[in-house]
Image 1 (cartoon, rainbow, N blue to C red):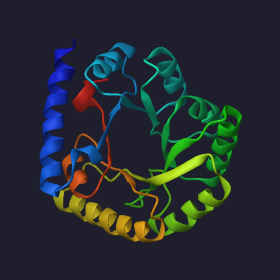
Image 2 (image 1 turned 90 degrees about the horizontal axis):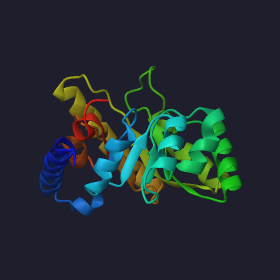
Image 3 (image 1 turned 135 degrees about the vertical axis):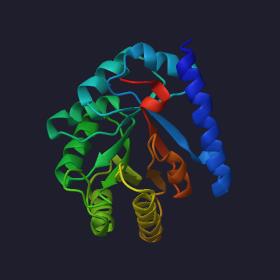
Image 4 (image 1 turned 30 degrees about the vertical axis):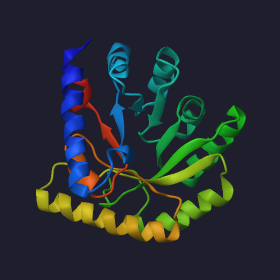
Length: 227
């Protein structure tokens, strides 16, 4: 067993539990996704042996290779930008997709899922800080966009939203963004009550993200080690 991963997992689990207690939430509400992009398969297998069975990949080809080689009960999350020519691989190999932000991609993914006779858990990516360098719809577009997807693409089971806030900013800026996410999530839930999942939180901010209502944490190097 890779002692490093085991120790890191204990530390992160302890911090998750403490943050849940502070937020008066059950840790059963939190899904930990180990971001395994660029990690070798033996690292995934070591983490899986510790009881981790949700893994996140950013590249469709890498997702396909790993899902074919790793234990079949792993739940795979596609969390990277979606290239329309790769939706077939995502449809075949992913259980969740976090990064839907264009109707063209949603349509192609829905068609590929039809071919696979499969449905997928889907999250819409929201560009909360309006960064030109990041994908995602704007916050004010979220309700109309999700309603459009729900109306036309039945193989996408819309379950919530994914956020990627700025990381290298001051604590005040980070908390301002978290507060914007909390306010937006409250508003969205009044209009889209089935969209209860919030994919928010990485190695640098997962404790604050739990306080903000996150249900899915995406943790990479601090859990699995350097890539």
